[in-house]
Length: 130
Image 1 (cartoon, rainbow, N blue to C red):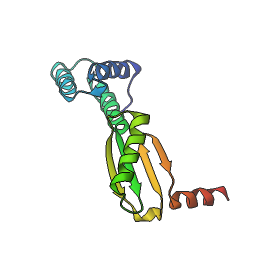
Image 2 (cartoon, rainbow, N blue to C red):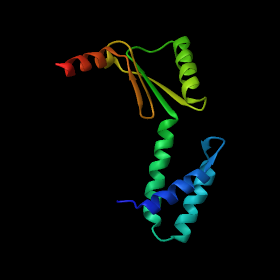
Image 3 (cartoon, rainbow, N blue to C red):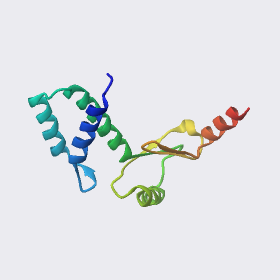
Image 4 (cartoon, one colour):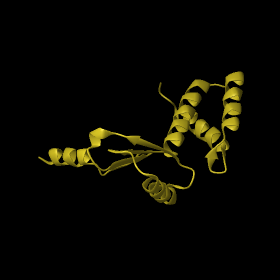
């Protein structure tokens, strides 16, 4: 569905109203969606589509996925959490995964930012250079 500039601007306005303490407030968001569903203003569907996209992007910004070839010990996890917290703020949700395909090293993803320090990633970059 193509979203107009007006619908996108309205969705951003609603989204900003749902932010409290630098975090998305679910109760405010539910109330805004309920208001849109009840009143059905002109172009409410594209507004909801754009609002859904903004919420998804916000959630991805707050999610940190750390993949390692082997399970990480508690000291390494706390050091990574502290470093990412200093860069992105303390309100990150961390998930630590084990991915043996990486062979060695780590892959860290926070929103659209990806740091790939794995052997698999290095081999892939090396293969792409030739």
